[in-house]
Image (cartoon, rainbow, N blue to C red; front, side):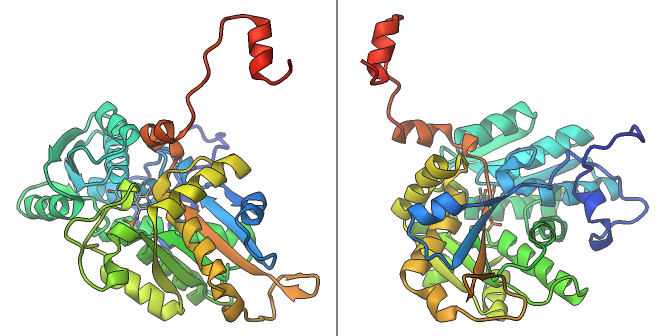
Length: 374
Ligand code: F0G
C-alpha cells in the first residue's frame, strides 16, 4: 500500500481498537464502511412524521458490494485467513452471498453459497456468480439452507460466514459507532430491518461498547421491523413458509432470535411487523423525495418508523434529556433508520412497479409533446 495514499482504509483500520484483531490478522479491505448518513427531511414531511422527529438514514447500500454485510464479512474473512482457511461458505437470501463471494475473490479463497432457488434478487445472484462463487440453489427456504450449511461446515474444512460466526457481528457493530461519530450524539431510536437478526444484535453490541467506553452518554431504544409475512419474533413462534416481497428478510426462524429480543428488552424498544405495502410505499417515496434508492427490505425500518409515529409511539415516549437538541424550545427526537442494501440489488421489482418508458419517433416535436411543452 502506498504510504501517501489518503484513501479511507475500511473497517479494520477505522475501528481496530474495537475489533478482535491480532498482529497476525491480515488487514484486508474493500474500503467497506464510512457510509453516508442522510437527513431525510423531505421524506419525513411527505410521510407526515411529526416535526419533533428528526429522521436520518444510515445508507449501507453505499458499501462495496451494496449492503451492510461487507462490514462483518471483512472481519470474518480476515479471521478465516488468519486461521489458515482456504474456503468459506454461507446460506443466504442474497446479500451475504454477494459479500462473501467478493471478499473470497479478493483474498484468493474458494466460496460456496447455498440459496433458496428462485428467491434471490437478480443483482445479488449476478454478483455472487461474477465474483466467482460456487452458487448452489436448493428447493427450500433460507432457514433450511442455513441448517444444511451449518451441518456441512461443522464436518468439513470450510469456514461458515453466516452471522452465527461471531466475527460477523464484530464487524457489523461498527455501523453503530459511525452513527454516533457522525451525529456527534447517540440517536434516541435506532430503527432496523430484522431477518436472521444478526444486525440488530450487532448494533446493540456496538452501542453498549461505546457507552461502556464513555463515548456516548446514553443508549438508544432499538426498533426492529420484520415483514408481516415473515415475522416470527413478533408472532412468538417460527414461521414455516415465510412470505414477503422483501426477499432479503424472508426468514422464518432467525438464528439471532435471542440477540434481537435482548436488544429490544434491554433498550426498552420494540420489534413489530410491517406489511409489504407499507414497505413498498416507503421504498418508492424515499427514492422520489430524497434520491435514495435502497432495496425493499431496507425500507422495513422506515415503514416501521412511519407506523409507530402514526400510532403515537414517539409522542408517548418523548423524554427530555439534558443534552437533547431543541427546536423552537421543544425537544427533538433523533431517529436513525438503517437502509441495509442498495436499490440496484433488485432491479426486477423496480421495473415491475415503475411505469414503462414512452417510445416516440426521434423527432424534436414528438419529444417536446411528451415533455408537455407543446
Ligand atoms: N436487509 C437486507 C438488505 C438484508 O440482506 C438482510 C439480511 C437484512 C436486512 C436482515 O439482516 O439477517 O442481520 O437481521 N440478509 C441475509 C442474507 C439473511 O443472506 O443476505 P439480519
